[in-house]
Length: 132
Length: 232
Image (tube, rainbow over all chains, first blue to last red; front, side):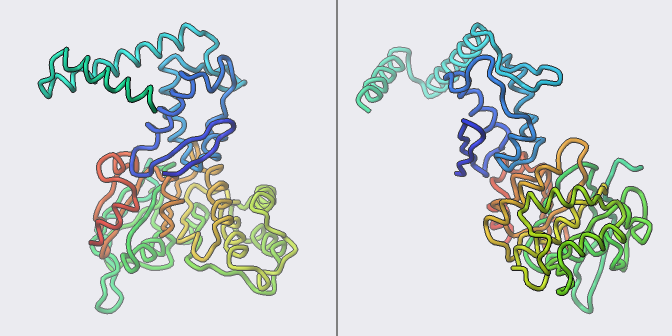
């Protein structure tokens, strides 16, 4: 695992996994958690590629996905900014949560767990989380 | 010009009984950064020497942007040979002036920017430089050329970590959209592999594995891991 800083953000890159997915995911998380503020300018593709020491095409690919998510917008001649709409970020977070919940439930169901089992495991997990 | 930067078909080259390249077929599209990887003796340097026209294949055809390699393709290719050195009694400044006179497409302003970025003192004589400093000089002489194909044979050999990081950063400023096609061979995969769009693994003068770097990562892991498993 490689730790690399770009502006205020720290990325952890694992060279045995596709890099664009990791950059995309860590940017999404930073935006969803509010580590990058609404309306904030993000580094250009080239600046980001230089800080992370990765191919600019890889960063560009991740930036295109962020724009498709509605999380960023490109202003002609000014650069790329985080959306200034809190609703868009909220919508993205909820969609993401829904998606992860569905995947989790489907995974548990595939192993034959009932809804009661799932609820019990969730409660257990939450208990552990509180104690951590 | 052709959409392919490099095209080889059935290229064979032997040195005595040793087959350096064995019916090698390879196509590299324009604008890509490609890692040419493999163990020592896999044929990487022979491939580069054939692409620059320094060596002729025994069999097969080679095209650089649709042209056969030779003096006419020199204007298209910047080549950094393995363990390249400069004249010991020249200062870096003199090397830059030499390059301006003799190397097609050499951009002196870009060379000066690179020297500053790589923290290379232009008053220094090549003979007084450390290996890392001389390697940076040799690399900047390549990177300062406005040419569509860069061939870098082991640009990091014998270079300390801070110089390597500087070199990688300056490579990043050169590649990407509308950038040149870059072929890099290196054993310093850990630092270089995030730069690759594609990787080609050569073993015994043949392509053992090739593909987009991200696809290879998804299927097989890091370039380093692939290299280890190919040699097992």
